[in-house]
Structures are given as structure tokens and as C-alpha cells.
Length: 377
Ligand SMILES: [Zn+2]
Image (cartoon, rainbow, N blue to C red; front, side, top):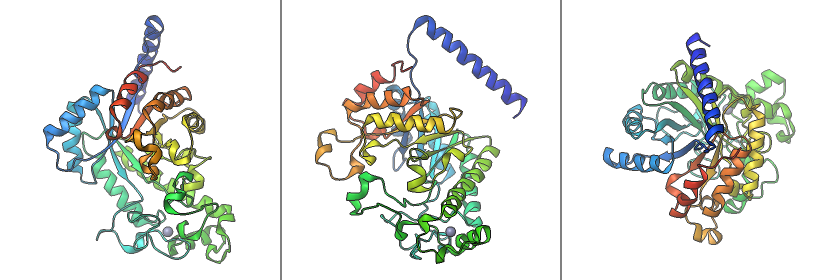
């Protein structure tokens, strides 16, 4: 770490101390930091984008996690508008899921335990084209892609998403939607059995995983795949830090309770600058108290040394939630929102992230407006 950075940290630390002491004096609670996942820009004009961003800022959003595809020019354009609205701007770009296109070779996609490729036979949904994290070509391709976006002046940080394997076990709340009982790991959802990965695993451990009757019982094979994702993250972290930018990721809750088991993310081993666990309680058929439990696990797993921003899933149509079969349309009701924020903050989160501001109803905003100005310590 350079002397300059140290000085900056001291300055920030000093300001925090000042902030604390003034808070003790006037007792007025500080606003909690609020992030929001948002996509665009579609056909929106600059004026329309600015109007939307100004509105979000006035409602209490501080930082946009913005998904605008992979073209750096889009992030330059939209980032400039975000800055003029007084918002932080981080580029939210999926990692392992990549749509089929000529520059991505068919053999770069992950292969399941039945020998089927995510290239032409994706699991669960049409867009589940997961790449193989074990291929150097994939690492190189993704490194270049993120490097270009991180070079954009207006981009404050890179936000990784889908930085994982396909769900070998689906969240409990999704079983009915896909008509599955995922009581254990099944070959159709278990990746990556491509030649590169199985060969490297054999060289490393002496085990031919293709000959094992139940690979889910081989601890080394699980660890091998946690490590593939970890290595991908470490590589991308170097690339983005070299550009002088921060890097963070949306992760599954845990890591031990859920992320490792469902999607092979051992994210407490990652040297990212912050973590955004998607604490989407409805996906796990859980209530807001659970948000506190998984936030606590997250904070403890990084030894309280990295910011944990609690991702909250908002119900877009509260009146219809009970009748709605699709869990993607479930989420926090207005009357649950304050408890969700409270559970996050009291268990050590640095802030919250909304999925998404577009799903927030008038009733949500009304609760939110008060909840973000409460002192939860
Ligand atoms: Zn592979």
C-alpha cells in the first residue's frame, strides 16, 4: 500500500471519528448507505435518465450498481449522468454467464455430469450459458472485458455477478417452479466435467472423477471447484485494481450455510473490496429474521474486515404476492421492509442494496424514507 493511500485512509478514519463524536453530541442518526441494482439504458434519452437518477437520489439512493451490457461507451455515457445527479456509479456485469456469440468458442462453456454443455443445453433456463472457469482462455477473455470497463473514468468500481457455478441445488423456494426435488446433487446440474477440468483434477489429486459413482461425496472435487471460482475472482481483482478501481460482487448468502452448497462460492476466501450477499429471504421460504442471521454469518466470515452490503429483494406487487406462484415476483412487502433493514444493520451490514428501485411501490418508499434515517446501533 502506498504512502498516499495510507494518508487517505488516516484522513477517512479521522473523519469517521469526527462523525462519531458529533453524532454523540447531537444524537441525530446518520443516513444508512443505500445501493441499488439497476439496468438500462434501453432507448432512454439523457434527459430521461437524468430525471430518473435525480428522483432516485432524492429518495435516498447513494450508489447505482448499473448493468448496461459490456460496451464501455455505455458506462461512460450513463456514468456521467449518474455523477451529475450526485450518485456513485459501479458497473454491474455478469461474469460466468455469457450469451452465445462468435468470439466465445463452444468448448469454453461448462459441461455437466451427463456430458451436456451449457453452450447448447443450459440447465433450468435458456440464458444459463455458464462458461468453464477452468479454461485459461475464459480467464483471459473476462479479464479483458472487465479491464476495458474499469478503464472508464466514470466507473467507480466493478460489480461481479453470476461469479459462480450453475446452482447444483436450487434455493428451496424455487423447487416448485421448476418441478424439482433437489435433496442432493444430481449430474444434470453438476458442472464442470469438461476435459480440461477433469484432466487437471486428475493431475492434482490422482482421482479420475469420471469413474466415481457419486462425485458429490468427493471432498477434493468440491474444493477443486470452489478454488476455480476463487482463482477467477483473484485474477479479475488484479485486473481491476491495476486500473485503480475497486471490485466487489453479488454473492449467495453464507458462505457456509448456502453459497458453497448451492453454487460453489467460497467467497470468504476472495480478496474483493466488498460483498453484496443476496439476502433474498423469499427464495429460501424465510422471514426477515433470517436476513439478520445470514448477515451475521457474512460479517463474521470476513472477520468484520470487509463491507457487507445486504441485498434486499422487493415485492413488485404486494397485493398479489399470496396468489403469485412465481417466487421471482415475491419479495419484501412494505410492512416487512423496515424489519429487513433493521435486521441487516443490527447484524453488522455496512448498508443495504435494493433489488430493485423499479420494484418499489409508493408504500415501500414511504416506509423506506423513515427506515434509512434510523439509528440501528
Ligand atoms: Zn471445465
